Image (tube, rainbow, N blue to C red; front, side, top):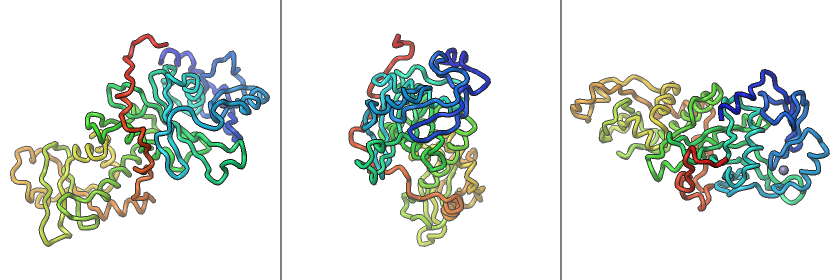
Length: 363
Ligand SMILES: [Zn+2]
């Protein structure tokens, strides 16, 4: 992958603009389109918004879009559908050309060192918007692909996402977070805790910013929506988190004094509850700005003299502070990824479906 891409490391953007459907916008990075088809000084490249076939010639593009085999339905299988937004799983082995053309298009907006020519080993999850109000009125208004993420079918590191992109005209609408949330859900960690994972690393600068925020929101929702098991509810005082130490702690509360009720939890417990890697939980807690050092009396109470405790580094997270954080950051407590949006066919983790052993002679 890397070798092929390194040949394509041109210093200048050789495609200046793309037309996707009826939208024209600038590219961000150099393209890796084959030079015999897309010359080095292309001002406008026409890309089919349904299958990502490309052409420098507007007539060729126009005749294709009239006949595009995907103009009414996206390829693959729908795995999620809620409020006009759906996600379709496209197997790169079944839709090789689609995977290649999508990757070529995505590269215009990604500065990744590796773009995946090896589409057979990947699943693509495309984010589709169907406007319920325009259905049937205009034959060109079928559906829009707004972005996607890819995922290796077999990831030794349990990566739940390889590459993510919301196309520029659709950015800043929280759609990246929707895709990230769906990538966690699809990874199947709720069924099998060995599948706890995260995005492939290292992350780009933009990826790192987006994920930090996504993780903070994910943990904020977890802390607010899942009250401690001792019966104290959201808003009932403080939640304590004991960090760094894997030893389980018994939830404790001071009966009759709700404002002091708290729950001790470890980073590992948050990790298991959210499907996030412990390192990502720590990144989020650090970035959060709601973590306070714990006073010894608060964290020791009820935990007895655990020999490991002295090495622990307990902190306190107050629900009220988390709630305040969600307000100042304009974060909805309700997860944008809706449980009811997942379709029944999406019941098995992708890793169970088709395992390709790296090095097998596919392409
Ligand atoms: Zn097409």
